[in-house]
Amino acid sequence: MALSDFDFSKSGSFGGGFGVDDGGMDLPGLEGKGALGGDPEEGGVEASAFDAFNAVSQITETGLEVATQIFAFQEAQAAADIKTAEKQMEYWTKFSQQNRENYRAYDQQLNSWYRASDYVEQFRQYQSKLQEQRAEFKGEVSTAATQNFARQLADIEGRFYEDEARDEIQINAIMLDKFAKASRKAATGQVGRTVTRINNQYNQQYLQNLSNRQITREFRLADKLKQGQAANVARQNTVNQVQFYTPQPVADPVKPLAPLPIRVVEPLAVPGPSKSALAIGIGKTVLTGIMDYKASLPEPTSSDQSDSEQSS
Image 1: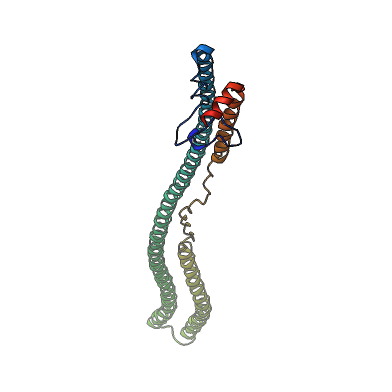
Image 2: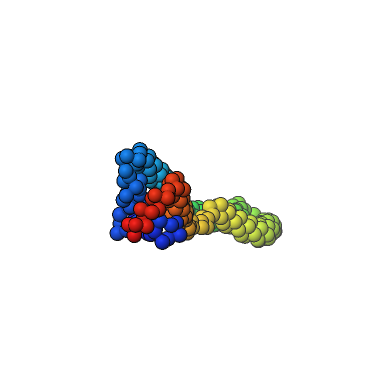
């Protein structure tokens, strides 16, 4: 806003003496006996110089006040812009920092998940291999125990038949002794009751041994069965000592989720000074300056008024 925007004519509210026409400024009294005119013989030069100095001082003071208001406005606007920039910088710094922290934590969780997944997979492979080895070992132990059981059964069966054969040999030896003694008696001429007595004696001994052999054979069969059962139980215990490996259940690690976008509201701009208030303040300053300047003008004399009337 400039002083040329105001038009104060002679018929205005401020009266004559100050006017702005076509962008120029006419100081009162420039014609005749005004501020810059005057009659040198009546001391008009001194009054004109004083009026011109007063006008320049008022204009300069008003301009300085306007410049001060504009500078204050610009300073306040710059301070508001600086605060807005600081808030924006703080906002984006925190946003970037939080975003980096979120993705750093996500990267660490993802690396932990990869390590845990690799460990779970290797542990499962280890358990599967251990299960296969334990099954193979159990098969080998079962085969060895079965072979040992077969040898034990063969030994039991061999001892049984050896005992049976020994008893059979003993009984047959009794019959052979009977025939041998009977033959010797007959060869020496002893016949009749002697031979009969010998035959009866050996027959009783044979029957007694045969009866004992039958009882012994039954006990021997029972012992053979018990020994076979005991050997079978020992085989089963040997096989059962090696248990099949049962894999331990291992839960799969949970894969972390990617961080969600940060939802925030950007800070609002710091409100600066009002431009309307600046315009009003400048207008008020200019008007005050004009009014002060008009108030500082000297009162027109009667000669000035007559000259003014004649010029009009």
